[in-house]
Image 1: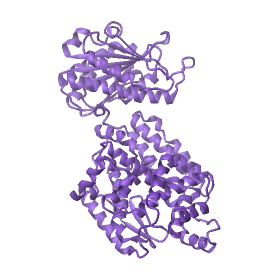
Image 2 (image 1 turned 120 degrees about the vertical axis):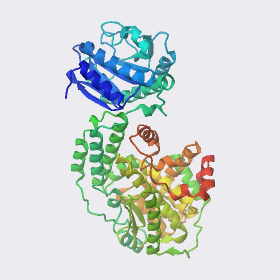
Image 3 (image 1 turned 180 degrees about the horizontal axis):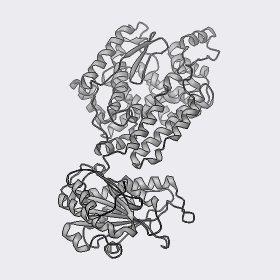
Image 4 (image 1 turned 45 degrees about the horizontal axis):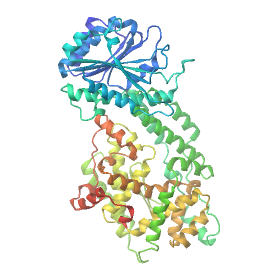
Length: 615
């Protein structure tokens, strides 16, 4: 409902804020008042008279407290802004108003940013906003920042609050003028990608400025500048999150690109004395990739005005698009090219690490007489570990399925699938349980405990960190043996040669003859890498481990990485959403973080070790 700005309306707004409530009201002519919760600041935008500027108004929508209105309604706005400012200044001891505006079209070569601030009062706040704006880097655009007096904001016809009243109530009035580089000056059309990028960076600069002000001048002491962001999430966000999850849930990607005739193909390959390319068969496709893509791009992600969540959703859409393309191209040469885009390839540094491991461990170290744990016994051990996790989080609804169409172990949709013919060395059982249950299932349900479903579905590129964590967990529980590292290195080498054009037979023979893997191990590595038409995903195990060790060496913590299926550079995004109370603390911790006997190993990781220290 659109409400006129009357004295009664202003009283209702201030009364709600004093009671700690959210205020969300539609104002005349498309205006909007949004205050997430009582806060010691307010952003303001007034559309120029007769020239609505919706692109610049959008800069405010990432904020937790803002008013969008029109210059023609300045008279009505005055009591509203004054009422909010005085009420919140009384509550917090001080208050800040920042008004955004676009440089007028007739301004000759304006700077990218012009800050309008008091000439003497609070120079540190002005310095903060200038410094943060100067740190914004845009391709081929010079970031220029100028500072001028805020006198124009305090004079008629634009004045919303007399200067004397500002001083009496402890209210700071700042202005920020933007050069509208996100708009074509001739046609008025918007450059959406530039607008999106600039909007996110300006939003962060403003939050840091407000953080500096409120931390010093008010009784409000947020723990981080991101804690000043919006805590209430628009319903459209949850709807889009659900729609993306629905599409993701309609197919099991890894199962669909894994052969169902592995044993038969291996027997045929041996019969042909390793000279005939194997023929792999796959599960029938349960989806129409083109129809799902249509649904995917019908999701109106552009309606998400929160830059952080909008980025997360666009990133997921891009990944789902690539996966659907790969499924449509399964068993064709095009599959490999999409795989390289989605999972990356092997760079020279990673290849060097892989070859170094294979040189350091030139031959298998275990004897032929390996004690293989029976599948039922392994299943019981995995069920015990699930029970351990369920004690921490009773909603953990998982289990173990033994299937004859699975090779080895695969976690899918939070359940552990074990192949009926799985050959698991007894000394590796605990390590594999920590890999599959203590990492993959744990992060699935930690993500599922969050309101944002993307954390259990998986952020794009999450596999690298996931597999790095999973392999590290093997080392932490003492089960990462040299043969396991040899296999991870072999996968990298095989992916490298796959991307250079090698076929299955070439890769198989290289693993067997040059790196001395037994026939069956060479087959399993080559099959995994060549399945579907060429899957480069298997390089992420060693790459993820290398990057994770580097991350921990820099002093970062292991625990935050387990909040869901995220990739390493999502940590700031997750941390921001935690500060904003959009996400909750994770409910489940793995055994290796709770076992005091493993503390020396965790300290060793912080001190810094390389992959070669794990040998």
